Picture 1: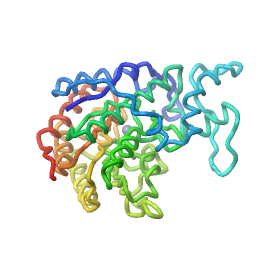
Picture 2 (picture 1 turned 90 degrees about the vertical axis):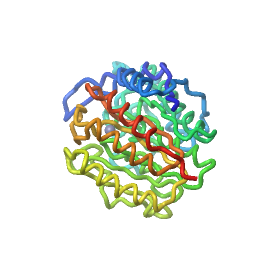
Picture 3 (picture 1 turned 60 degrees about the vertical axis):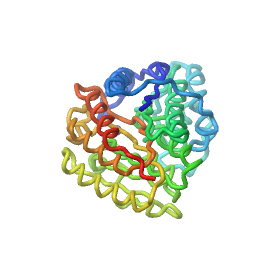
Length: 345
Ligand SMILES: [Zn+2]
């Protein structure tokens, strides 16, 4: 399997983070990618660089004003008297039925859901490169590979059409799904990250061509708090094309597998022709976010179960933070996937 990653993604190195109101180190650190790339290579992956898969693909998922904001806001922010080095919002439109703001501070609040996505001088290039990893992996699958792994860092599944959030700027899983749609009529996104894929859900919420499915720690007690409950099923043409399986905090392998079985049985009824896995590894028992308790062997079982769908698949890296088992968990997933993945024509 090919693993797609560019070193330019490591230049995004955010420092600001608020944890329960307290400033802390930002866990979405570049060392994550070093660990994940080394693990992918050890698991037998061939590392390749992403290709430029075009701004039009990104524009199919994100609004023009949001892309313009991501591109320009760092330089505009530097002209504010006494501003922070990184762009971090301090006010948000709690209702979004007003006007689009003109000022830097107003736009930062408009386009950023929380304070977890600082923007520095290297952020835009890194997030574009991360999106190209997803596009390149999807193109490889369109060109005949049965599976490809996009080492997307920064991650993407909390990014809405016009809003960053939870370490995410561009929605890489949505970008991969959108490109797969150029050939496949029905695509399913299976999100196994610890956190609900709220951005991905929102992007496809009214669509019946991309089924969005997420298994995650119950948002009653966990980020993203406002989305991810089981009664969110989609709207308009997309009604019944979204499925959430929230799990009690600290659920281990067996509860996760039972929830995943339910999730994938529903996904199979949609008859997807291709799959995007939003591959978060932060459900690990060792992850610093400590939400679920999946073991390294559990990631092998999760991979085998998804592989048994037998569809062309793009694996898109989402969360998963530095711990002793981060690399082992990716290796366990990739090996489990390759062991069981046989395309069903
Ligand atoms: Zn996560």
